[in-house]
Length: 423
Image (cartoon, rainbow, N blue to C red):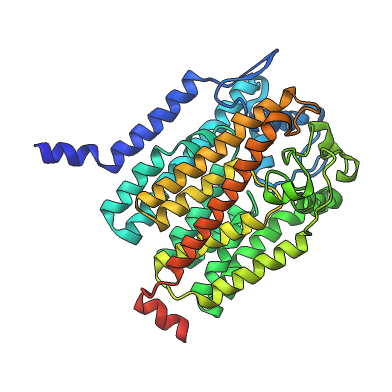
């Protein structure tokens, strides 16, 4: 009887029930509300209100990629604006945020199941279930899901990995393509595909995924070529922020683009916080990251499924380390990759440390910059603590990348994959 009870309480069904009930009760207890004094509730402090105001441009018959540009691919602007329009007369910030919050909860539940599925495939049922429980009580995913839409991107990213280790490569290519239309980061999974699959398979997967992305963008170019081009270039062209590169450049503000009205203008007409020019160019950073990536590529010895996950993980970390900007919610992608590569206390400690640094930076420090002169610029007594957090986070990401690389240097290749790569 006791064994049956223990097995029941440890089942995936119980985990999902607790997972869903906890987050739904969070939403009920801290309902998103817009008052005359500003935003309160579960979304306060995140990007949700900004995206609501962008979606509200539909009241003036202004729509994404036709009348205003977005630094993101089309899926999120389409969903946020679509929900706004579908709510009709019932639309307000609370209802809109509630619907999108439930949508993110659905994707986050999918992420939980994917962590368990990938973990079971790599280490067995017991370890996979333990990883799912660890992910379920991780704070960063539980908070950031109410503040932005990275949960959606993470779902398609992890789906791509799941289908790759299940040898369902075509489904992996489709998941990656959809993920790219949410944010561009899932395209980096193709680095692992190139390393772990035959050249003919890589070409086949590119033929599956690339046309889907192209077909999604063709109508946008037809509607407004200029705004669509701006959208594709915006992230790479904004000033450095919240990284060691920002410290070198003397850019002490966040990477936000500015007010809603600015999205109706060309980026050249928008004041991005007076960001200084990069002392180390984007091209040089990218070239350095590519060189490091090639070194990892040619020295990889591990070709089993854990090696594939580690290869994806180090690719993401190298990309984030070279990027001129950083957003704290990016930790929500690093966390599951770290847990899946290191299903032990070290992996858990790394995710705790990353989460602590993310929340220490925002909201702890950045929320206090409103009283500074100029507001929103890190300075005064908060500058040194913030600079220390940036350095510590950079060191943590670099240390994680080294740990992923050590996994890739281990000789534990699965025979079938080793033979496949030798052909």
